[in-house]
Length: 302
Image (cartoon, rainbow, N blue to C red; front, side, top):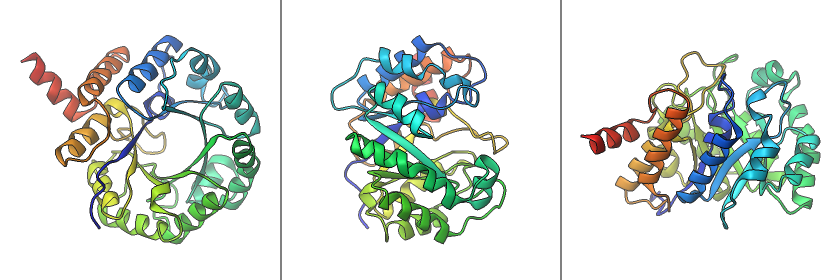
């Protein structure tokens, strides 16, 4: 299959990138990050999540963040909503898209939320129905699609089954996520091909963590079977509490460098993203986590 002419990048650093940070990040910095990202041309920014502050204290200021951002016309601001309470808060905060989530791994589902995959998806039915009734976009994240920290390999049939359920719920997009970063191109191609036999590829996105350095190859493998939506995080921010040594989401700068080099359009200002990655890394008192971002920055300073 021919590669896509253009790709949609969903920038997840404000939510997925920051949620596991131990030191509290100010609302002002989160707001500035989101504003900088939308100005750089991202059409979809995952802004925050309306979850219990007890479980995710870093996201306790979700309502304040959504109230203070400068909304760029045409930009989708997404938020994670685990239940109806979260959905109501998201609607009040004028979110454009709500994100529900489930796992393809039975063991992961049991360990995380003490219920089966089927039960966990049933819990999201009212959230999905409410979102669609309110005219909001609905997205679903499908974690552990390429491997699980508890059960190891995840059967492709399980990934397909969950993706199909989410599609039947009316999800506009379904993220096939490599939560612990163990996927390799052959497996990614097999999983994506199987999923796109039951769900239109235009509704499928790839969400890759770069734990073992496979993300760019996995994105290319996904594009080869018709996927053209990917999730990235500036400076590779993020991580996974279930994978020791996990380096977080694939860095936006690295993905943009690759896509630009392949002549694939994204509509995103690469130089602006490099600056955002370096700025945000400085706010967190650490070196930039993107190879392309660090190389460009070094070159500019030379």
